[in-house]
Length: 638
Image (tube, rainbow, N blue to C red; front, side, top):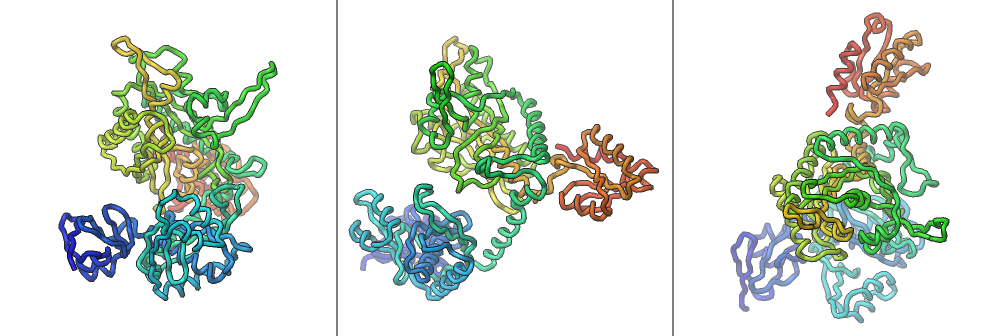
């Protein structure tokens, strides 16, 4: 049999027999690699180890150390779970079962909701399937064969019908179970050794509330029991830190059916944290040459038609008609973004190159129509406030302005809050406006700014806004989760669509660029992240109550009231626990409320004009004068 040559990632070549597979290439390199091969890459495409290779192909072996290996493992685990469900629930109809971050899910149409006992039984059956080490085998069917193979499975039939005519339809089989799938998969079910089914939730088919509600089983899978255990411990810690749970316990906010999904009601303590954040950031922005604006919450639909939101974002907006009382009925839209108001400010006067860059910021509340199934506390709300800003500038100023924004991101996220973060540049989506040349210029500007700032970035193909590319900043919290917060966008479409211009140094008219940016992003989301990051124990400068005065006896109350008044005048947020309760109960209450400082007052403190200071984690710090305590609190502000 003739031999062919394939290239390896290090630039070398290796010969294998014609008709060889990725697994054969791995065996030719060495037996240890062959045993470790999860999947392969052929000319950059992720494939099964059974995929054929051809003369001149570039072949890489994917092991469990490869970032994409977990995706392959989890997708395979979803198929094993589907087989287990079919064995236990023979009449089940199957939806889709993709790998997701940290796990996988599969949607099923069954006669009744799954119970915890069902999940345990499905897990047991999965272990049996894993122990059998069934190979994953790929087959390609024509449309008629595929329709016959999935007779009685309406959701699979729908997916098949949507595939373009002539496109190969691949299925994967493990034993007698087959599923519609592009793959790839691990070599056999025995690879799926460490897994756990985590929860069941309802999910509309295709995310459409007019379609059937399916049962979605979530699970996770890892290459080792050690990794699985570590993940489950992180999940337990995440549940302990859940901002919705802590929000109730700390009396920060609540949600009410009468307000609708995703619209938080802030209680005084939650509102205070938000205002502290805003006041602090407002000062930072003023120092950096920004000016603040306040703009309306609604605009006539004409504004959204000009901006492009009416055509490209309408399904995410709230529109309504208003009888103006003079025979006219106008359509209005609630703003999902603050951009138009800042455009109107720019357009309100004649602008010169000397006016640019013009930096406008706003803590603007916006509303977006999110499906109730994806609303998640503060993390994904229908109404939220953005620390929004728009910079109008000349093309040659874009680079420096983006670099300045990245500097601001670094100061806020890393310098003040101590977050590690990473960056993604999202490129042109399928639904977009503007010509290729402008998109290329804008995308290059973002890349060059990141490089100038020394910030590494990944490319997120096709995930830009419809009006321009963007940088997304993702921070990492205390338990290793990532959250998308800051965004920087280059927009060359808004200014043109709204007819914005400036006079150049040559006395000609030119169209400015418009940069959109947030640093904290959604204030609601950032508050949720902080609650979970700090497990509710906010740093002193952010805590809604920084100190509580704890009188040992009622006779100490007048002195506590005097000290509390002094602290408040000095900018310290203080309360007096005046309830007729034992001191230990008051201390426990302050600890439960995660108040940074407890100031205990007895006869000795009254006589010496001091307070006995206890810190929530360090414990007793001893007696301290009121002035010294004020200085201590002030020193903990950024």
